[in-house]
Length: 222
Figure 1 (tube, rainbow, N blue to C red):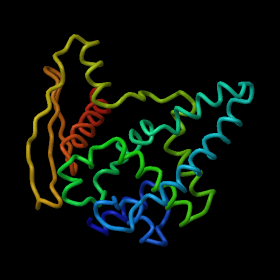
Figure 2 (figure 1 turned 90 degrees about the vertical axis):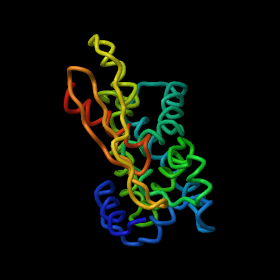
Figure 3 (figure 1 turned 30 degrees about the vertical axis):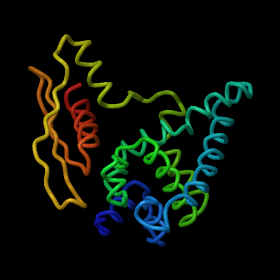
């Protein structure tokens, strides 16, 4: 982990200055890396997330019955949504993983990303309090809560569907460069759509780089 870069990223995504740096390091530490892993923070963050989303749904959908609110809540706090938001923020770039977990693909695991997103929330709560944690959650879940997200699909799926709708060949992903030491590899991927354009992205895993490249392509060309 590049600690200065990690803390700079924390400032950006939380809009807060990290006071207890060790909390955030622990929130991103997988059990394969050390004993002080993210599981306890995940437990806490899961409860903060659920309360925050439930309270917002109660306020925002004041005419809906309990059953509908429960359905909304279950979807919004699911591991799938947590993983999607983690992926969009670049959480995987900062995970601390043991060698076996890296080799097993834990950096791309939706389960791991979803769990770490919850532990991240737990860290924000302990570092800055409930209001800061709620603001952090609502900032990143707002479009999904309101149902006004421009596109809640995974960027690669969204790009593939866009290409098909515009009678283009399917997007092509090419690994341009793989660099860095084994414990901190960087992957640069280029995505191209015939007769439209191409764009590159770099991340700590090939899958994340593809996702980020697809998102950048959608933002630039659609």
